[in-house]
Amino acid sequence: MAKIYGDALPNLPWQEKPAGWQYPVWRYDGNPVITRDNLFMANSIFNSAVVPYGDGFAGVFRVDLRSRDQVLVSGKSADGIHWTLDERQIFEGYDPRLCLLDGKYYLSWVNLTPHGTTIGIAYTEDFTSWTQLEDACYPVARNGVLFPRKINGEYCLLIRPCDRGHTPYGDIFLSHSKDLTYWGKHRFVMGPVKNWEMTKVGAGPTPIETDLGWLMYYHGVITSCNGFTYAMGAAILDRDEPWKVLHRADSALLQPHTDYEFVGDVPNVVFPCAALTDAATGRIAIYYGAADTAVALAFTTVDDTVDYILKNDLIK
Image (tube, rainbow, N blue to C red; front, side, top):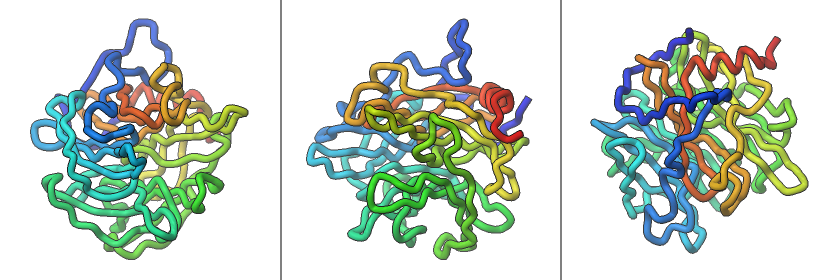
């Protein structure tokens, strides 16, 4: 059995695996959990981040307004399913990630500048006031994901370098920093390999530390005659040298299958951005953007995910 290094989270949102279900990840039957109706003037609310906070949960949410401006807002929930969002805008940009690091909640997101997209970094202790740091990459990058602790005395950040368009550049890299200001020692982590992810890959939720290594969920994209299709994959990175991929599933763990994943502003999208873990039970709850329109929730366990990776391992 695999072991998660972390805290117990007995109030983690959860549903048991449906009888006869053979895949490693299963959906919440009340999906989607957040829609445009959660906030006035929202055209859509999707790729968003969630962390345990107090007796419940807090999050930062991507909101595309009716003007189609892209902004971030915060929200709170007692159970991780029913959310109240704050109309006050925190930052411009999109696709946030959150992690508890050095006793503070650090936010990384795609920051919008006149010269392209960068990785913004800020922190908060109360989800009301925020301190913004220097951008980690300038320009151009997306999918900036911090590790939840220093590794060998340095902060680590997964990124996907890109250009000012939607693609090309489809590889995940790792950057190091001693102070969260100056970043360097860039290392290649992985790129597309199999058909389901052949267009590009990008890091998803904050990596989960296990006894086997860092469990990294990520999104992979294939380009078909009907456009992009986004799905969720998983890999295990070395704990001390996280640019080294130890194991990697050859196929998607979760891909568009339901109406709310097929139909929306951008059809055929499963885009994971957050994962809650309960170290006591090995349970994992994954929040993902569905069709660039709503936030959905899925469940797995560390054993379900690791078993799938090892049985379908690209790394021989």
